[in-house]
Image (cartoon, rainbow, N blue to C red; front, top):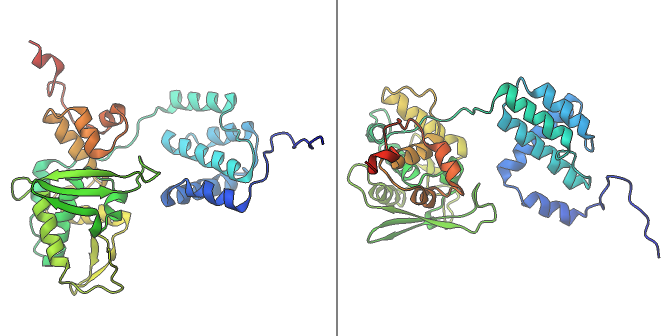
Length: 317
């Protein structure tokens, strides 16, 4: 029997199960970002499906207001919208690629980067703040030191559970599940050796865990979040959200008289990479700690490394 030809550009209609699995291939944060991007695209006048010319027109109209990295995400959202609806994506067409190349040339590709937290700043930030409770100071100290030592993203820090941590004679090991560079949840172990006080992340983590075992918490789970909210009465609440990590850092910087502009939760990750690079740690060791998949990405995270620091010629002549 001769099969009926599908309309041009149309793929077989997906079942509900297929659509569910397609969505499960994206993290919750990515799904929310894509939904927001598609809403903007449709508000501009786009639709699913659309032609390659429509996408190119959208890029041209948005080039003056959106960064290249944001435009790239919008293209990914449009492509995903076509895939889930069973249409061929117009994103990879020559006209779209050519338009994007032109936008890069005209507007550049520089991205705003978070300033790195230095070891000197970290030493100041973890000191107790007089206006904060003892429990909050304990939590913040452990949070900042663990975030820096592990080179964690804010989403990774917020997602840690008490069961993610194990201790050995040499330090602590944190089991990391699914993340931006490990969407399939293969997982990896991040080792944090003992350090010199007061910058030891292992001792700070032990102090925090010891304190939280005495705290009542509503809706307690068998494997609660590692870092939790602390209310004014010293009670432990639910886990911290991604945005709370940056808020905590900002609050402590202000309390310590440090200028918070340009710093974010990502400053902890950038700080580890920059400090390690300045200390001569090889890229492969930095990648093992941070989970970066390429040396190129590690290089992008290195901030404020002066031309004569770790200069290649220094070890030759």
